[in-house]
Image (cartoon, rainbow over all chains, first blue to last red; front, side):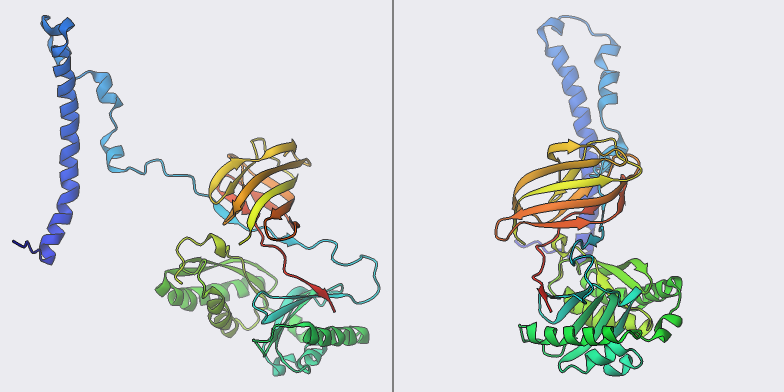
Length: 294
Length: 114
């Protein structure tokens, strides 16, 4: 014979489970109490003794040692210690000889080889960062104009004493030929002695608070509603000048598609809604992701 | 993620320092450091390490049980199974009873001069 439940019956059964447990636990307590009393009376030492009413009733100490009803209902009354993991800045020390008069540049291609970071022993844009997404954005900034004149450069990001180049060709693995051209271009422009980046950019830069509120609005209204479908979330960690650091959580943390979400979704939304935002860094510890979507 | 054989920590404390033992977590297991030297008093330098011999999914330095601990610099020497030993230096951070700081970094990407 098959027993079939409809939705209403299932709900009834589920509602019954906690009630049944609540019924069972007091009964066990009663059983323990009665067993104690029964054991006492069965004890040969006490068997021929007439027990007083105080001896028959369960001892008060035993009752106090039993967990309270609230503790019974909350098995997580002592939750494990949870701490927030923060990130400390990584210091790059002794990269270049301190007294060098030459322009020294070190190139570091990214793991997926679509970008290359160039560290220079000279300031490029102190205190700020700037994203040149296309050649037209570079107008008035000699360094960016010169870098866009190199074949294969898709975008340029400058930040403090670094330049990051994104190249058009995503499949090529060897950065050395293009990096050599970038190095030559950077040295040429630096030797001219003119400002590397348009002064207008810094002059018109909004305050950190304005950038922060714009980014937070973008996160609340577009980014988080978008990634929530995959159980993810994005938080703004810090802002310095116009450089921001974010952290991905939930389904985004450790997700194999996090890089695509970051570059094609989050970066684009931030730059559309807050045009003055410069570098966007992701501080997520993706290796520690507990429930990645992909 | 490479197999972490062992790591050594050097912590430069600022103001305020910390009185309790220095603890770290590896893959969410909290442990004390071994072969410890020095102090976490203000201005002190503390050294310690641990033979992990496992894959580190997370590695953090735990904040004090009470109060704050200002750290000027943390230098970590890692020895991994499949790559050359490397060192990472972390900058200033302040820890308290609710925080821990990440001290794990993958081996550095190769660089070249241009």
